[in-house]
Length: 259
Length: 348
Image 1 (cartoon, each protein chain N blue to C red):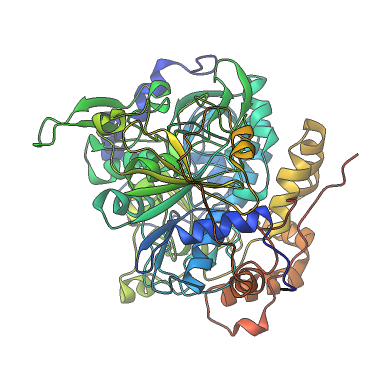
Image 2: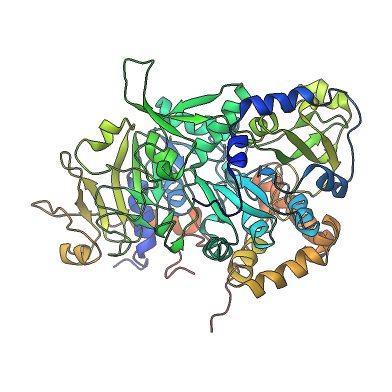
């Protein structure tokens, strides 16, 4: 028996995010768990990836976990910094392979809300706003959505579309003239993708111990379920050690329960 | 979107490239010593009702000490814009900002800024238009390029476009791919303050590390104040050709070491992480707490040096300097410890 504690739900999210990254890719990294996932990938299976950041840092030297996307660790001896408009321009130009996006609500077509619960006219709560989310999600070839999955946070339709997913499903995103699109969703339940024709969210792999019933109970719409359910291979002791000792040793983003 | 505090003139002025051009044509061309005090610069160049652009990246090379001086001087009725614009939150609380073109207000993972929600819910401040970082950045960039607008693929298909009266979506008229594009107008705020690592007395300025939108904003804004970490001889900038803001854009130069505190300034100091957690987690949950917070940090300080005393004085400055040097890999990592005690307020 291993004496390494199994991954907590946030560590599983970071691990699944890291596995969405292939070696050699250029990765647009946002704040929080995507940062953990990106750095974990670089320190494990994908040492040759290049990390780029919204605040302008490009390909920084490895260092401590950034406290923010504007942290000096995002431009630590980087060969250059780019202005914000130009850094996002790379996503449209086809130089960025994968990006990550979190949100207060994610719906069945992968649309993301980071703006408002309710409406601006009838506010329940106001959220920080798009930031770079819309830009990344409109322009990047593949975006991976990340969130804690509950029926409220995964409604059939988001209250407000901040970042476009597959809009109303089918070919509506393509017809709108948007580039790329969401390729996966990573939550504490596991990994989801989008069915190629309807563009509805579908279970791809469940985390160890998870069931279709639990995943469905965490969701505000009907998940598509494949015939054979696959499970995520749990992270090895070595990956967990790197995550805990090297990537996020102060548990800035992977402490569970958070706060 | 709101119209309680603003009128159509404000909305037109933001995208009026002829008006911005006329303003720039009338600006003083003289290469003269533009140094004045922070108090004078804020008093003279930030006028009530101005469209005011935030610069830097919220807590990275942002002119926060100048923003605090705006609060002290009780500036009012400004219309804020910027990407990001997290400092606009407290400017709303103290009546400095009455309306905003929103991209992002928050401190990322450090918690919800409840003051922002309170100001909007209570209609103390109103939202005028909704943007993403990148689309707003393109608006500033279009202004810098002298282009009336830029066509992009951002904002399309979203609800943001319904809350943005400036951006128009059309079918691409010039490409074989005639799919939709968003026309993002050049954006011309009235005024911005830019904190630069180096400036000479005339206003030629050097930005080190990420410039975010500041080079574009210096060109776009009608009025520009530079607060400088160091005032350097003109020859220093000439020798290296590292200037990105020319003196003729600049109205005032303020010698303001530590002007980005409690945020960070690349090459100089790391941020005070706890301060930002104090602000969002302790300062913003209710108005009394925010007033107390500003009484302590702003209304009972007169300048950045008083502020530094409250952050821990010379010891804090030394730590912040070492941390920035280590983060930028200019000193050995082992000399500096990035451990800190995250601020977690006690819950009842």
